[in-house]
Length: 141
Image (cartoon, rainbow, N blue to C red; front, side, top):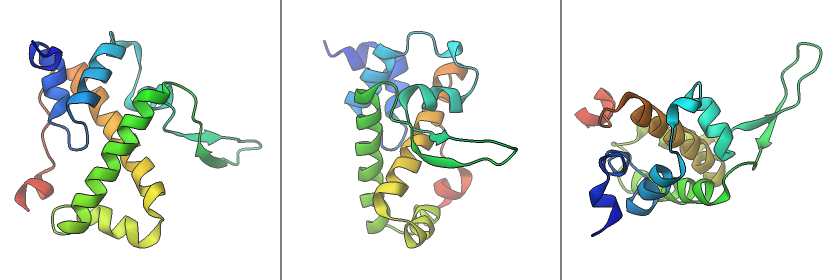
């Protein structure tokens, strides 16, 4: 029997756009206790998807992603985000905020930002124990 079908957690994670069967089972298997993280940002930092901070004198300087953490999960989330970007280009009415971001930033930068958002969403789904609910704006489109 497929491990994904047996786990309710991975089935809930699979409903998040960009997280497929492999990503859902990997997250469910790797993250045994999501409450160990205080926030979705801390979870994304554990994966290595948040900007590296180099702050001094009250001035916050954010660099590229830290790349510390679980390489496999980070890779799965970025590849899933690239798939969502491909869908967004095909159907711009479904993801207008991604199209606007693509107009300002390179595609891979947008993909990493979307992967960060997907990780935070996955943390929320894991901690709350609820199913993923699409934004009302996205659901209306």
